[in-house]
Length: 75
Image 1 (tube, one colour):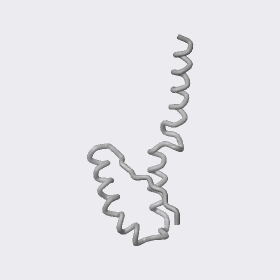
Image 2 (spheres, rainbow, N blue to C red):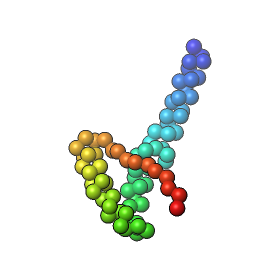
Image 3 (tube, helix red, strand yellow):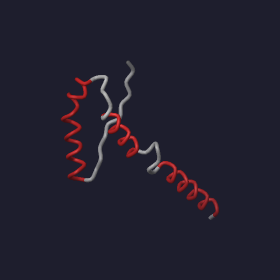
Image 4 (cartoon, helix red, strand yellow):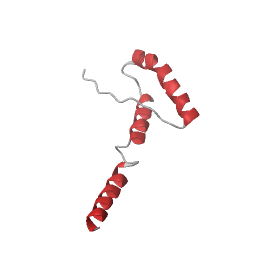
């Protein structure tokens, strides 16, 4: 029983750190949104992605679900 309690306590502690924290998905989405308000290094790419972002915004408004795509690029 004590072992089960320790495991539950560990899970709860991890959830408190990660849910809504600086590494959470919602925090990443907000950071990305704020970055889009800054001066763009690639305005052409931003214009190409605008329709996709608008569609995702409408989807979020209609369903309450926030979808995003995360990628890494080396240039």
